[in-house]
Length: 269
Length: 240
Image (tube, rainbow over all chains, first blue to last red; front, side):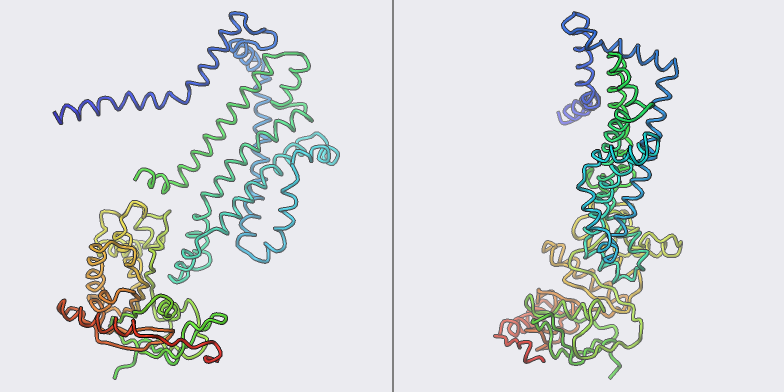
């Protein structure tokens, strides 16, 4: 009997795993089907809300014309450049202020003041100072990304267990070794939370910046389409934002799974 | 009389208005295993922190037999680095092949050879303390300081670890200072038991290491009666 039970249990497991894998897709796929049916049956005006198939068709057309790849590329460039700049600045400032009391005294109050200014409120100022060129949009993304990375890096560094630091000192670790073997790995989970949050801020900032002041990029494509009441393209841009957001999230998760393997081992245990 | 490895001469330690230690005098000889026992707040851990040079005394002199004495502390909580495997916790991720081999040897010595790539959170309480001991032994210390390392373990694991530590220290002829609340543990493991009370060492008894359970119980009772006797703690003004 025991054997029979055991076989039944193990035979049931793969089916459960595949269902678990499919579950996250159930809602979006279901929504698309309902959307397609609703438009197909005329429950929704297709001029206001085009069907998913029409959106896909529009995407194929724009891709073949080269307009879509061009705008995705420029948006990705702005997002990546702004994220790299803002993330680096936030990380360096967070490390410096977390490690040095002098640096903290010098910079932290000013950074906390600046942090409380909604960065999107700086758009008029940035446009006046930098125009509507690439530097304006990259600067806005940089500012938006910098603060979450700064706050989390600073918090991660200053929250290191002092007992671990004392152990490191008692075991003769140099300052450099303390930083690389205790302080940085200990702060890493918090830093990665900041990076994940910053990736969301990155897209939000870029979308707003491209919508308000741009002549290229996904945001510009959406604004331009809105002026011509081209709802296929408007919805296409929204879908692209969703996909890019999901892609960022997957990258953040992959980074966490590589850098924080020890936490996953704990959950597995 | 041989030269002591560490000598505490009239040591005092004051934190603000609180006299943590006053007039502490004792010698620790090479190869000796001594235990400091007493109530919480009596000053035991302060003595250990001074001996480990994590803090400096307010008064008196601590003399070491040689400069740069290699000292390692095994703390009450294991203080393992959760992001490093057991092997990395011992070698501190050293890339030096000799250090890695030595770390593996230390891991073997504490019976954790099958757990080299395991993270500390996957180990039991006893295994974690074994790992902490292996880490302490890695540097071939001349002086091992044990700060209530077994306090969080269950009774059976604790007993096994007591025997294990005593054996490892005896095999390595390691000079060891153990801080503990447990008078039985002190009597069972140490060559000498020192009672620390109200910030100073007030009594000393020969330990019962390797002796019968009756001897252990006798030493433990003797030490306990001293610990439970009324105490008289000085104020900062008396110290000054």
